[in-house]
Image (cartoon, rainbow, N blue to C red):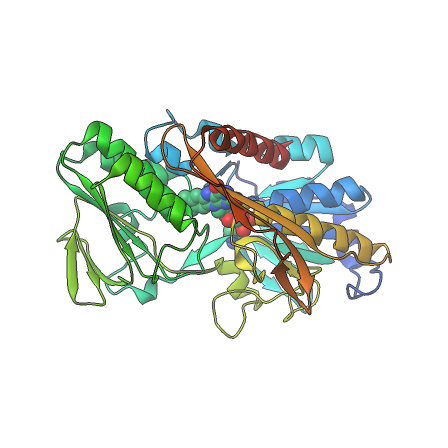
Length: 424
Ligand SMILES: Cc1cc2nc3c(=O)[nH]c(=O)nc-3n(C[C@H](O)[C@H](O)[C@H](O)COP(=O)(O)OP(=O)(O)OC[C@H]3O[C@@H](n4cnc5c(N)ncnc54)[C@H](O)[C@@H]3O)c2cc1C
């Protein structure tokens, strides 16, 4: 769907939306605002939930969800597709029509290109939209400048990151299928923090599973920039020993700083060359591009500092940042975290707009990882605000005692529930 400016205005409710634009409120989160429109940027794990929950809590607030694509593909479970456990990405794909039909969310397919925090205007490829409150949930962007030789326009076509689900995910699987038996698959993991701490290790497991079945003599070489496995270490090591002994060559503290796409090689610290038949370079990450444009990224030039109760930017009033882009203290950058943050953010936006008291943040995260076709493990935590920062509730964080088929069933149920919640 491409919208020209006329259709765009029509979708926003024509003249009434312009009237709304003119009466934008000026209040902070501590008090009520006069305006009634929230614009949400990004229709992924955080944005869909923020948009839906604001409408569910107060249908008098107009919510405009702006997303560049007409559908969303989930990263959670995309490693299973890469490992050959799914025919296609359709079980991971959602549309936005029901958010519009069931909740009255105005969904606009457009690229958000700018934010003017002073005049409260979002600039998009199809026109400007004013807001009273803006929620940014744009996911991640890559710090490709930290890898010599990496060209965003061409490198991912040769060495896919597959860290945003969709065509990249399909490409990585195709490369594995086309690879000659005996070839090695190299996975490079950036320094934390990055989207989905256990994700690269789950990916290694799924690729090893595929190689074991289809590519005799092949193995996975993991070049991890981190000093050790970042998440669920004991369980991954146990699963690798049980299922893929000798198939996964894990190398800690090996930061890839340079790539050679012609020679199909990566260089660790610019010196040690590692060649691969398939190379999955996961670059270091930062907040989504639009967060940088909006001026809500902190002095680290990577992530967005926020008030941990409301997820309002500490740099610009009335702009909230949720999901991977924000600094959420002890919460990992995950889809489930984004979901929790979206609900807290939505609740406090509605409260603030209605002059009600803000509620304390209470968040939850569970991340499942598959080790084989039938076994998964999880890490779970509950989070709260303490002394101005999000911390894990003492004693709440834990991992599965062992690899488990039951966890795999829970994981499938989690995916079904969360994608349904995002799309209906
Ligand atoms: C391989 C892998 C496995 C994972 N597994 C799990 C898991 O098992 N469990 C879990 O909880 N998490 C998992 N994650 C992490 C999860 O995918 C992310 O944490 C989550 O998607 C973050 O949500 P978000 O809303 O911040 O960003 P996203 O879900 O990425 O949504 C961002 C959206 O914003 C849109 N957008 C961005 N910029 C613009 C713009 N300028 N204009 C218009 N639209 C824009 C994008 O198109 C996108 O749709 C996994 C990630 C990976 C890579």
